[in-house]
Image 1: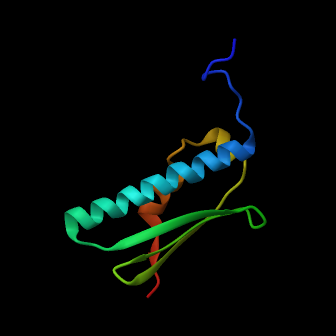
Image 2: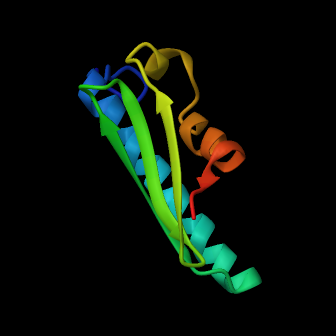
Length: 96
């Protein structure tokens, strides 16, 4: 019997799940920032397999933001789903 608890995800499915989860969290971050503080912004996550990196680019109050982190498939098994978002929230840089 197959249940949601014993389905093995492929690496590609795990990557996609991480990207979707993180993008949803980023969208929520900027929705809340607009509502609570009047801050306009957005961010977009992408996975660059040829560089083994997760990159998040965006704009906050008209200034570009940037975050990148080395990423290896092993992280998908050993890290919680929210790790990319949590690390971004602590470490992203405003470039302008």
